[in-house]
Image (tube, rainbow, N blue to C red):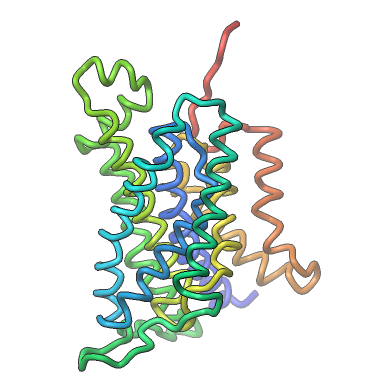
Length: 304
């Protein structure tokens, strides 16, 4: 066994897993605050990636990502205020179908605004500032990591951990837990529950933007395109494995699935083509059969 290859595969798996963790954490945050499953999360990634692309036409990529984040937050809040809030309290099937309709609407909107072709980040040469993110690729002892993987490890992984800590110890985390337990009780205690929920959607859009921008190749090659929608489906296995109501679970599950994908690509793909894409969903099937509340989700027991 080539130890360098195993280490390289593990680090690449953690790099992708960190992006999955960030996106899934925002996805779970929305579910905790509203009990709404956001089936448009892949489109949130797509919108975020295109916002980053648009900013990268005028600014360096790192700055473009930073400028895209507040725009993504506003987009998430507007979606919650204009689309989701009027549906709260409706039949759960109606809400599910509405979010699927939102996904189709956003998908069509991106086609109208940016076209069907994949874009290249930082394609324009408008200013004298460097357009590309500094390359951090390295080869040490036979272990090669791309710049994209290194940037994911040093930005996405700490961000996922920071989000978990913020939700556990910050004032907003306390308010969110109160709203998720009972919005009525939270309102009675003077908590501005609608604002807390709107912030959850805004944060979810921000995390989706970060994941979308990196998966689209902002840190090395490629750019936004509608292939991101297929990548966005991985959020659902991550959320289910971690526990649909657990942000720490989403982070742990994202790293696990990233590692499983990387090693299945290395050892199984040549024997069973397509197994890498199938494995996360096979894991979901096993989780739903034997541990439906996931790794760190709340095991709720209802008595009737």
